[in-house]
Image 1 (tube, one colour):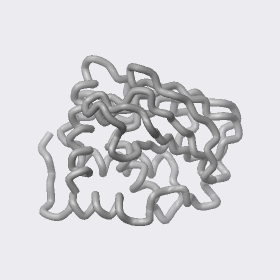
Image 2: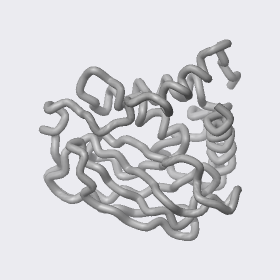
Image 3: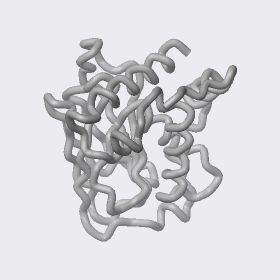
Length: 196
């Protein structure tokens, strides 16, 4: 997959997302009406480099932290989204140690989950861009909208990650075939953010 860099696109997009006031938590009232009827366990990984021991917070569409869990020494986590939580939810990682830099991550990783049946969600720079762009929508954020934003992010900022070959970077099982590629793409995008 070729990088599709526009002359000003990446710096403008990166700068606007990280420096603007559009950072999430302001979903429309209609999105808060979508709630899960039973608890859902979401599992995933936290990857800039692998980030171990991060605290994962689940933030409901109405901006309330409804659950949290601590990731393990393999950068994996399992967190329970309690019944009657307003969707879409955001999973946010705080603290933890990035095994590549041996320090806390430089920025907060997050992802957005709009589908109440989704049970896998990875937190990476790619998912962070997706979550932040989705938060800037003028309409209710649903699974279809999130899928479109993922397409945009992978097409413009995928850093060579081939989702068709390796699986979706936000929801595919992480293992030997795709871990290294996802970690490299995450590190590359994270470095773009840091340098910008």
